[in-house]
Length: 312
Image (tube, rainbow, N blue to C red; front, side, top):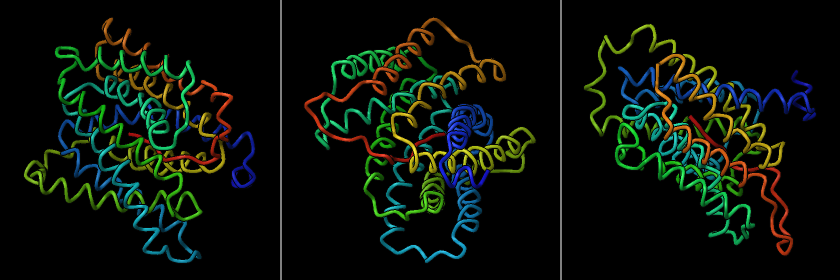
């Protein structure tokens, strides 16, 4: 298996994509379970501290120490993706259902398309423009007053997803280590510090007590560390270095389907017609954005590597 990943075989690509599809779709359920009793930012801080520390210890051995410039870039990416992006998801899921959170986060490719146009001058095809309109119409349906458990949390999640997109685009040219797993470990470690400080400043420490750590919460937390961070985040980082972004981005319309199904099955989250219509609009929009062809007049090659998600 190591040899397959080293030579970027089709089997390795399929395995990595399947991991990101299923595991990241299921992390919304795990976050929702931990959120019942464990404060979201401190939980995320410890999650990324453990996962980042383990991954760093595994991949940094025998390599030159990362420079301050590389740590600075990792801190910027980690803050955008994991403090604002993932931390925002964890906080939002204390107020809205996991399936709804996943549907809103699925608009990530829409933000990437907008920022690509705004900051890099990449033109949008007519198909991509239709996708943007359809996608944000679906989001508007979800975040309208009365459409979710907390309209404020839903709207905030829209903008935390924008921060993830911005950090992702910055990561394309950031001076990060060449090894994607080392870069991922550094981002998690940096983010764990930011999340811990933010959690303490907002008073989350007072909400931590012995009863916070029930068996369900501990199992969900362990799942987030081992599968959500170590396994899926590493698979995603590898994909970004070895597969075109249009292929990697397909996770965005698979994750919400997995998340909604698991939320309904294990947490009894209802699926109303609003969720079905809005979800269908968002998934359709993501498909349109990802599959849209760049206008022929714009001779820009798609980068082989792209930004880190998340995820959840």
